[in-house]
Length: 400
Image 1 (cartoon, rainbow, N blue to C red):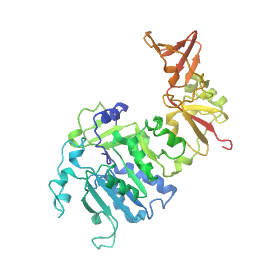
Image 2 (image 1 turned 90 degrees about the vertical axis):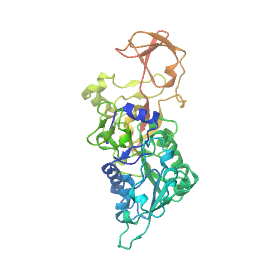
Image 3 (image 1 turned 180 degrees about the vertical axis):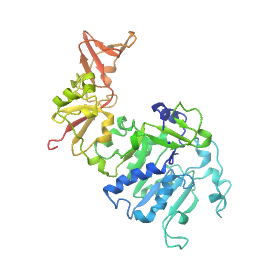
Image 4 (image 1 turned 135 degrees about the vertical axis):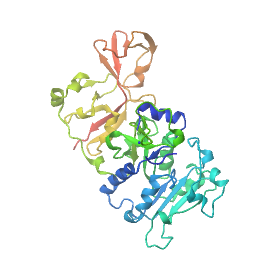
């Protein structure tokens, strides 16, 4: 279960999933920055809305504290947060209830470990004239607080917007759960989301897009004291108690201004003249098995090409729906968009070893005249090919 506070290499998130280590607490500054992006676009985005935070305990979570503090300024109708039972949470190594819980009349020594909790903020309970975290009311849930349970799903159905940092190991399932009820949302998830069969169709259909994201692409999270070992060098900072991930971002269906800011682009000729990295990567090459050209760098997308282009997945950080259409993805294990099928190929590895494979049929292929330096390639008869990383296929809008 995640909440909010520092960032790591790409392997760290995968390791977290494997270990079912889902306790990452989001920083206040990152929540504030993302929510402000929505408010800048629409100052009334949260007004008269019920917000559900389904993976957040206000005793620990900055999400709950942030929205409780801004209950009045945002014009919220209701704030609901739920937490997961400690005994059901494999990412929580140790647990000790806080004074906030133990001093409440409803405290139960058994339920505190086996049941989730529900927190509700919707009115001025203490009569001080404002609605804030001091008016938060809570009780135990009947179950352990799993977001998929009937009682948390019922809270989802009565809410307008769902915001959280969900369990890293259950991110795709969580998005499906949110969209089943056709809700607005803003959640944190891995950068790999867009290339999955569950998420890419939603991006293509415009039902989901990337949020403003973390500053500099660095997401910092606080981890519990019991889970602060085993990180790679440079990932965990013992002075701050934060870990750093560069491979997570915000996913949402709330509008923000960055989403509608078109990229400033040059022509094909100017890119080839001034972009040395583009030239080094081979320029604009046509795929052999898709009617499209390969654009290896998002900054090299040409302003004067009307056909389909394969661009890096990182392009989605700057996708403007008024400028380009998303038409596909070069990942054929579940998308059947290739124009041809290759027979079995000989894969020539960097070290010169060979093996028989069918990998050219899994993605975009480019025919090459000579074996590439220090790169795996594939032979089919007397022809040679290289594969690209997964690419998002885009096409310029006619009036863009």
